[in-house]
Length: 378
Image (cartoon, rainbow, N blue to C red; front, side):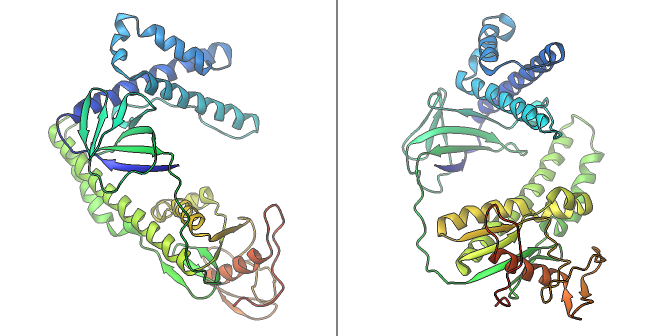
């Protein structure tokens, strides 16, 4: 399966799509309110099929007659997403985990609706038929495979995108194998620290644009609510955030290709992102480690590169990569430290990368991690 994303031309016809998205937001909020009321009385939630039948009956009433203008399949998709959210909540709570329930969404924050086989058609050229209207989009590449599903999305600025899911299976990229293996440690000073000296500096796109973001925030906060000036400053702020998001995404894709071209196996540490965000907050979100790992795994699968993760609780920074002694007194402020047993002076991130490389050599899925004793890393 492959998904293609294209941006629609901006014109007055897009107003109908915005109205349709707003209509789905109304359906979402109605279903969430109904589920909460039912759960408060009976202690369980309404099944997906009962909720769909209930909405079908509501559409016959004059109060909800405008819902008939919404595609029936997209309404069913809204109900399915709510049902999926409640199932996940009950399963998590049964395991003793804290899990939130589906929440209400304002219209301006509701972003998309999905059409399955009916209600849309991909036309020749750069045209797509959604409902009874034909829209044009920026066709940056050809669409391969049979279209199966179409999702219409809008961003904070108001631009509309179409995401087309097809049954096309991408062929594997026949790359030349290099025979190289590397271990990398994620960090804040350096984005990636390699065990072999291959380091990647942190781009920190948000930090570089922080002054512009602050000015846009101040301008937005000074305007009167519900005024035209407030909407103008909101769009200006949203454009700056979108630029940062695109810069970060471009950096992730290029770095993923760079690493998978250079190495046949990449060893990483499974990150405790919630703990990192509690300590460093905005900086961790700026770097986007989780999004980068998803892209890296996707590219590696196509190129035949192995990605191996070691346990996030393994003391990679505290363990001496020379004698395996563990420095329990090491804290987050110590960027360099000296081993009390062998006297080796370590750079914190480099030492962690070496340990990730060594542990990954002897770790298999489902096994406990243990350092590789076959020799020093190359």
